[in-house]
Amino acid sequence: MTGAATIDAPQAEADTRRWLKRAVIGLNLCPFAKAVHVKAQIHYAVYLPTEEAGLIDVLLSEADALAALDATVRDTTLLIAPNTLADFLDFNDFTARAERRLARAGFDGAFQLASFHPRFQFGGTEADDIGNATNRAPYPTLHLLREDSVSRAVKAFPEAEAIFERNIDTLEALGAAGWAALDVGAGSAKP
Image (cartoon, rainbow, N blue to C red; front, top):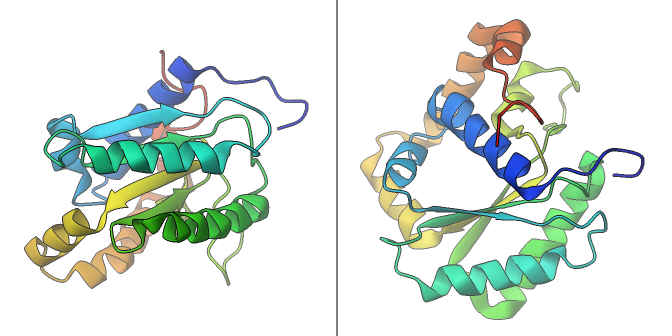
């Protein structure tokens, strides 16, 4: 993020927690998030460098740490990168490379990688389409999820495949002004 002020770890984590509570849980965009949040099973890691060069190594290290712990202790990890990959297309390309590296490191079948970005845009949509907010976080964020936990959650949630459509309906009803009122962007929380 050339020319932008760097964000420190406490601010990045506070903003991400605020987004999780107000948007992801508050709007029920992910019906599985509340339980792991309430049980304090989410690990927040922050990658501060402005260059992406070491981010995959940190992701692999976080995957090792997640694998080493029982899901009752740490079920999932959010790796926040506030100072790099500001361009969504670069982030999208990076995420694909990260998925391949996780697979080569032996995590295929163990973890899924979800991605969130402040400028997230689904293919075939306009940049200001409110539906893109389903995957918008304050900062570029890589989410490591345990495959076993995802499978259990999907089995427990009837019609899990309908979550995406329900989220789009929720955001369309909320509208851009409603999303803005949530105040879940970068710098919105007090660390």
